[in-house]
Length: 196
Ligand SMILES: [Zn+2]
Image (cartoon, rainbow, N blue to C red; front, side, top):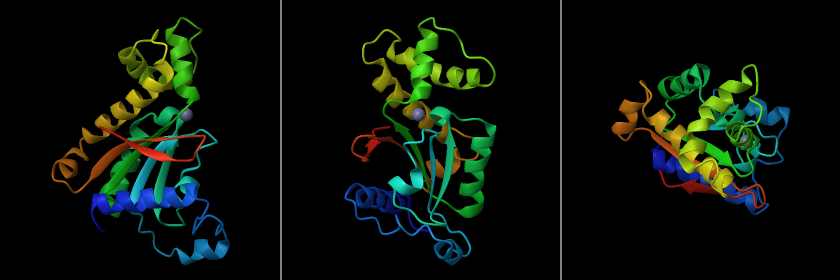
């Protein structure tokens, strides 16, 4: 199934098609296209935020069967997410994992508010805040640029957590799997890779 590098190049080419307004799959959301996908042979798994402005298949101009998508608030990891990624890598042979953060992420903003002394969220929303909090703390909750910086830091922390996962660490070390971080620009639609 190609190399991690080839998979990343294919994915970024899709984003360029989306940004340029020339998608090749973008309008093909028909039942016929779905049926034509046959057995799935995805080449990447994307972990992104639930934000309604960041539909992953669309912004990478992907079609039925080409990528696996997982979305949680602030792309927070839990066992279900990790198990899903382990499945896609181990059983479907996918060789690229992308963690995609985005500007003006509400989950990160909520975490900043909580750490600044606002009212803590109840229920399971607290889990999201707890998972994002280390990134905010590392940047400094009173830093004037805490929001954009914490978003980037949280992507990097998520990438590192995935690279250290019990079932992912070995293929990463062997070069069979790449885990990369990226950031989506809400204004331009562009995806930029982050140095990890
Ligand atoms: Zn978000």
